[in-house]
Image 1: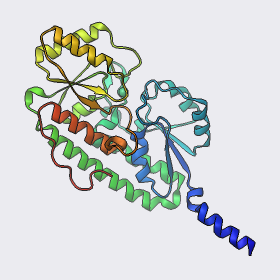
Image 2: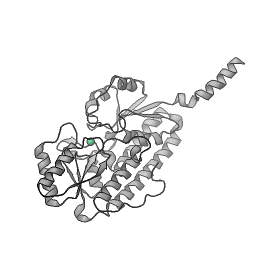
Image 3: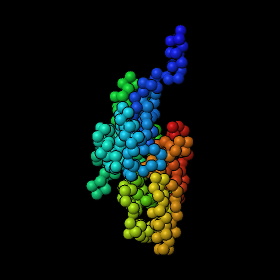
Image 4: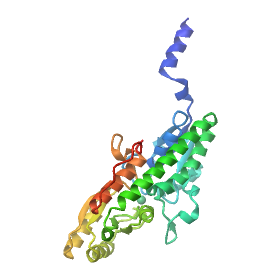
Length: 302
Ligand SMILES: [Zn+2]
């Protein structure tokens, strides 16, 4: 009797399904968020580098090493995104999702691959089959559910891509220049026909130089660029310096808003999910550059 009662209580407090779920640890939220939906009910997905943190600069803490040891699988983006974690990720045998993208689609910046693949939804969706495979390995009984959820997420990414394209197309031709602090938007700009002007290279590892800021300010003044964008994971100092440098050239450059480049936002905000991050960025960019974002299709956001 006591045993039966104990078993009943344990079942209430600790559902066996939750206990049995394998753990997939993703380095960044842009991987963890779609993974969470693809593996829903079958794989527990965690994020190593939390909301608002810069993966280029992130260093592993002792607690992170423990989380990596306890995870059943680790998925990283690679392509030098998690620059300071590269050694430890290699040691723990992390799955590198960036390798799932055919090399001809990866943008090369003078010998360095650009890791910001998630910015172009159609391209990012090409990594979902690999993500689904990893999860099916962890939870083979869930193969069918995972395959279905994968297809749903690919369809969502395609709808997101179409909405982004149509919204950004409303920006006047002369204002189609995206001016940011670091070069996170090359895939985005390539996908949607914007010109990309960043003060700094693809990593945030070093501070932009005064020469970089002056050159960008001259470009902004010559081209009449109306707005520059700050990024939620970066100190806005470089963009403020740019605005001052543009003013010294007689050009009024405004802050177009804050973009989510390398991390998702806190739970409960629009950019807490990957599709929400894209919607937030497209809305901010379209509006600041003189366009009008289209109404969101139903079901686009998770
Ligand atoms: Zn970046």
